[in-house]
Image (cartoon, rainbow, N blue to C red; front, side):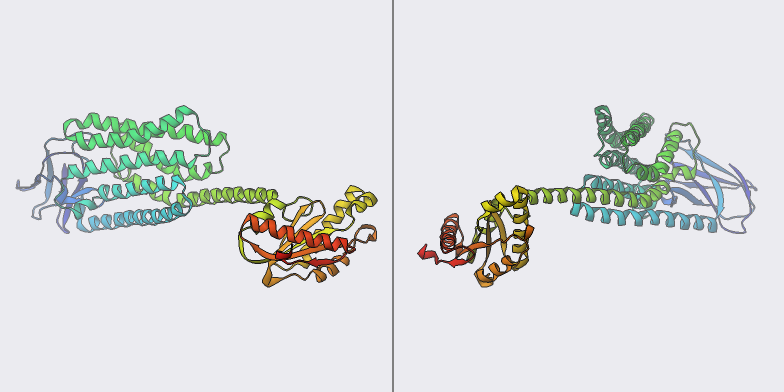
Length: 482
């Protein structure tokens, strides 16, 4: 490298971090003097700056620097032996660190917030894609720490090659989590069996290939890196049919997912092209994952929120349907009152003293004969509405069958039978037909089925006495007298 520079300001040599053994830098000056910097077993760790770029101070002397020689031992030569080098001033290096610190802090802050947000939602709602997204963000946080070079600041004794191993491992875990998240996000869409199988294979292959790089990198890095790049290419390959399948099934979430993941998918394809030597190394390509995932995190927060809202709406609709179905099973369809089964379910088990009123419409057979069955049904509906309007709030009201109705209330909130009869007499019936009713009432406990049978028999006897006495009246019996 030739570079004629004066020393008006302190200079530094910046270059890319690559897998290599020892590195020696030779600085040649115009007067023939040579200065050198030699790495130890840690490699370039002492020189690492944010963005995983090495920055070596240029020894200050006069006359000018004319050449820099790199002597690299044990180079993997995956992205080159030495690349990305340029001479910068100390101020330029500080500005680069400040800019990258903002970029990495931006992503880390969003990732932590989204992890907390999605874990809280998962605890409340239990959707699996939220856990997969948290796993993805957690892996990317680890990748942020290793790829940014900040790990070298936190652990200055770590070898740079070991940092790169961790870098592979975290991005591999992120790739596997992305495959799981993609499939679980579209879980409600039925996909071909081969695509499900391919998704599982990709979710396992990417982190396993990254683990192979971390373990076997020192032995056969070129082969391990090739498998790693191909596994990522396979991951991208299954994204396309997944999105196509979601589009064909008119998924409500496809457009959100597509908008959020367009940048990461395209930039991942660019990084794979660089790994396969289809394009050259570039600093921003090397750091594109954080940029694209920062944008993805912002948009995906909206996508996940929309997905959760849709799932919540679906759940609420299902609960509403369940409540409606349960109500239909518990309610008499003609009058809207509880049916006998639902009445008994809610009545039996009350240990406090209860008042039971059995109400029977007088001469209802004549009503059907006079008005017909449709007219009789209208009488039953009006009669039930009058019971609801007259009885106080805690009262259970049911149609026990035919023209017989029942009211149950705690004895502390008694219903006066005569008051109820007076209200029923004022109900205007079809064709101004006069409709009366008879009431039998009894008071007692309803803790068991036996209690119910005894209380019902007592109220039924009182009802019989009311009818025998001329109808349109009420009678009350004591439980021990029935």
